[in-house]
Image 1 (cartoon, rainbow, N blue to C red):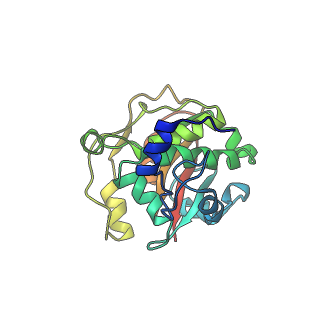
Image 2: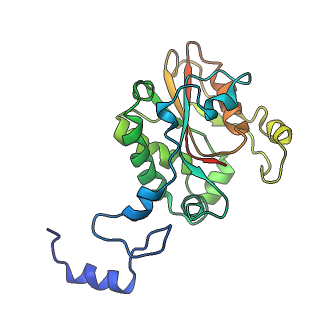
Amino acid sequence: MRKFNPFADFFNLLYPDLCVVCSENLHNNEQHICLSCLNAIPRTNFHTVRDNPIEKRFWGKVPIYRATAYFYFQKGSPFQKLMHALKYRGNKEVGEKLGKYAASELLESEDFKSVDVIVPVPLHPQKLKKRGYNQSEWIGKGLAAILEKPQDTSTLIRVKENTTQTKKSVFERYENTEGIFDCADTLTLTDKHVLLVDDVLTTGSTLEACIRALQQTEGIKVSVFTLAVAQ
């Protein structure tokens, strides 16, 4: 039973917590997204399927072990608000919460349970300073909490900033991400199964660039997780 707090109840009356998807009031124990919208998220369930469509996107480009996304993302859908809140409205906690929800489902897969360390796609220091946080790191924080694995935010680094990917062709995106990542050392992740984490998978060019950088490490095995995949 919820403890009565008149000050908190009065504050919530003036400034109610709203679901980032449907904008309805959140009920007790709901955070950021209501239960109805959470259940309606269009999940891919690709973590249970080997050789799934996301994994096939990387075939012939970079070596990966497994790849999945939590849900489908479509421009103009209600769930676009989730990504907008996470990336542009400073609601980093949305990433952590959804990371936890996703991780509880990843536990169904022995492949994803076997990861040793979680590595978020890094932001360039200038963009990190401007935004104030790395949304992929907050997603990884939620994954790490449920999977009970450490998160490494220092080995994979972004050595140069690229221009925006918006409206670029697949080849232009590849050129735009070439050589922008590196490894601070090639020993920390030796013989580790790494779960590389990003927010949205579109063409995959950013993740490919990360994987090419990580492949400098001997014996590394890379799997990919994104919160959403663009349809």
